[in-house]
View 1 (cartoon, rainbow, N blue to C red):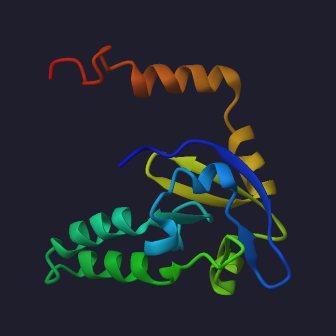
View 2 (view 1 turned 90 degrees about the horizontal axis):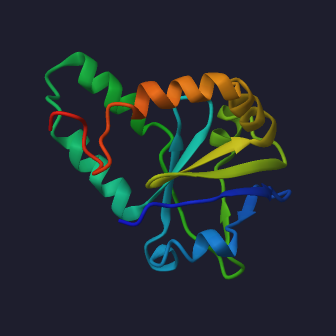
Length: 158
């Protein structure tokens, strides 16, 4: 899997469709055949996965012990709302109304690539989320999160 890059400001049309930007679509070579899956995110946003990435998550979830109530609760909550998306002939996907309401997405949204997935945010919430971390805080966060990695990409001591 290639990691996705980019941040795309988009408009939602009156029917709840969004055009997948060409630069993003080029990074998703199988999207027209395999489609995508959208689901609730953990921060009042939505997350779009390629079919291959979604299948990896399903495989992980299938390994959870279903006799544990917390595992059943997590899977149930995580899977609720998951919806297949297919591109139409104009390169648009129809976003489920219930998920748009959950993420409080209006007509302006941001598709923000995050490694192997695409986060969908209302434009205002995305700007708020990014603005919550000052440049100094970001520098400190980078040192805390990335400081334990060596230049070869592994954590020190591995």
